[in-house]
Amino acid sequence: MFIIDSEAFIRLGAFLGVLTAMAGWELQRPKRSLRTSKARRWFYNLAVTFLNAGTLRLLFPVTAVWVAMDARGRGLGLFNAVPLPELWAGVLSVLLLDLTIYAQHMVFHYVKPFWRLHVVHHTDLDIDVTTGARFHPLEIVLSMGIKMGAILALGAPPWSVVLFEVLLNATSMFNHSNVDIPLGADRLARLFVVTPDMHRVHHSVVRREMNSNFGFNLPWWDRLFGTYRAQPERGHQGMVIGHANFRDAERLKLRHILSLPFTAKRQYL
Image 1 (spheres, rainbow, N blue to C red):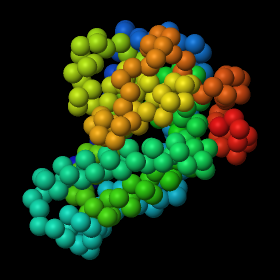
Image 2: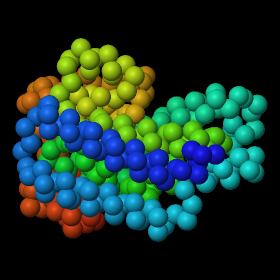
Image 3: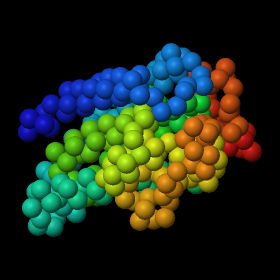
């Protein structure tokens, strides 16, 4: 119960801890030289992050963990109906929630109304730890609704929901980070987690590269469903980050980020 009661503090602590650690790593061993102002990008990306947190607090009177606790109390969901040890139910819940996020990510790329929202994430002209939190508020709202629906359907143990939320947030910041990991270490690490080199491919302006490596946390789904791409064609130093049709930094300020899904012309998406 301590983990559940302290959910907000655990998540905030993990967020600040990983953000600080990866920012320090980026300063010490950057993978790529940044093309745009880091201070400006950090301001816009973190502003969107805090706006998203406030939007969720305003629109959702309950948290994902509360949904899991309510489902348990009512006996709703798969793992509240099937007799399975708590540990296995939790582990399977984390795996299936991660698969849900992978599937959601693919849908948000291929279904145009959702892509209008998700394209905000891909208009960052560089990629670093703050890119991992750069999402349009409406995408965050939809994502939370999908996540809560999956938690209810699974009957996920509350502690596994806390664990999943922390892992998803931490790995998103990790795999968006601009850090240089030796090739051998990266090859080993990406057997178990999505690494920065693996996910960076997904932020290429080349469409076929952008439509690959959808995993945020676990790397297995991309390999299993054929969406895995090991390296960008032009290499990590030669690849261009962002979206081919949104290259003007002056048109990617906070107000533009928020209005982009409603103002972008269809042919530019």
